Image (cartoon, rainbow, N blue to C red; front, side):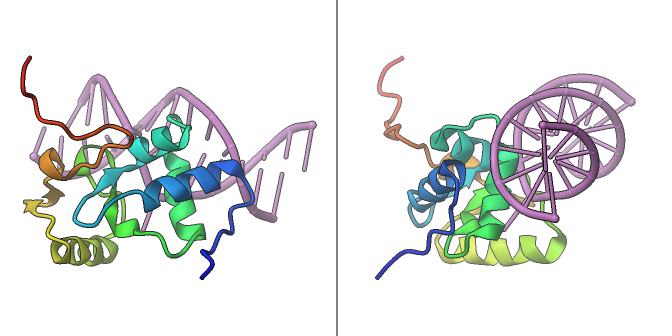
Length: 113
DNA sequence: GCTTTGACTGGAA
DNA sequence: GTTCCAGCCAAAG
């Protein structure tokens, strides 16, 4: 099966790939995805890619600090999907404190400091 | 090739 | 604690 790749540019392709790396039950931020894709200053484009490219877990993508930038209904849809994956919420925001995915970095525990 | 826009970010009110 | 303003960067028209 071929994965849809409407990415005409490496930016879209990189962001698309980065989002696919997010495991289930985990979330990430636009800035983190953009940075993982190689464009740390292009967080805005991450959101644009999510709309252009379908098949991506857009519900796993949040704004900085877990703040959602979307309209109400989309936020509810997103929240429902995340809860289905086991992601907990902290009031109106996602508990990124423990559910933020790290690209390339092994989420190792602070054994020593 | 220039202009407009955008599912963002971070800081200040 | 949340909401508003201004800045950044690349893609689309």
